[in-house]
Length: 338
Image (cartoon, rainbow, N blue to C red; front, side, top):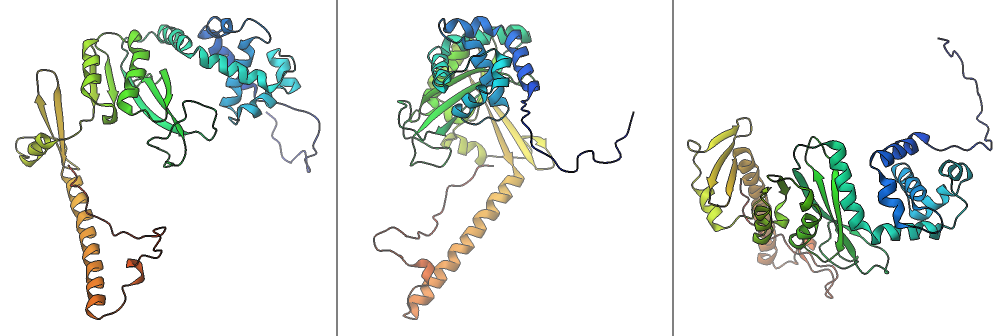
């Protein structure tokens, strides 16, 4: 082996050589063949430029630079990239139309992909994790874009909601994705996502999701399919009564370091698991105590100003009578449950 002892190029001089990441393209090509995607994707476009090279190129670009579709079209139109994918020079609108074709046929494409992924992985179980989110939509041409609860904290913008179903660890492979209007809630969106994957789930599969999608109808549909579920429960007054009767001698200690105790209550159609944390309880009490002390100090400042006939401190005033800059003192919140 020969060691390099000095820099061979003191000054980098630009030239006309161009290159792109061949590793990403080779990886996409490999999975494209392993999943038999030519039979899934290619048959949805019979005329003009074939759909397969456009999709393979777009996937390689999104796994690399991952910018807009417009820039993806510009990248695909580079001579060396077109040569690799055997593409003629094309207008970027061709790529937009290809994506529209995929969107129109997404349900059938997802169903075929599910079969091929499960066949390739040979999974003994099909436990799935499901979750939903929203993405801000800045255009005005999509009928799915609606105002709704924004996870991006942009209630002033329209959005679309996304649902994803993924095989549980250690597999961690997505097998479903749904795109719905921005004003749909998680309980309704659950049904669309679950309907997309229910036919490929084996009996006894565990469906894991958060409490936003937890309602009676959804739980019943899972049970009717001979599957199980694990979700967070929306606590009510009967659950409050359970925590009020907490007894460290009766509940099971599951984490000694943080003082976490668990209790299981079995019902005919479900089992509820309750967790109580001594550490979390102390943190909540300390937070409430600090807030109470702060509010008391603010009340004293206001009272002292009133008793002395002075103007209120600036931080307690309404700065704009039109209501554009109004400071409202914090109000007490609900009690946390350990």
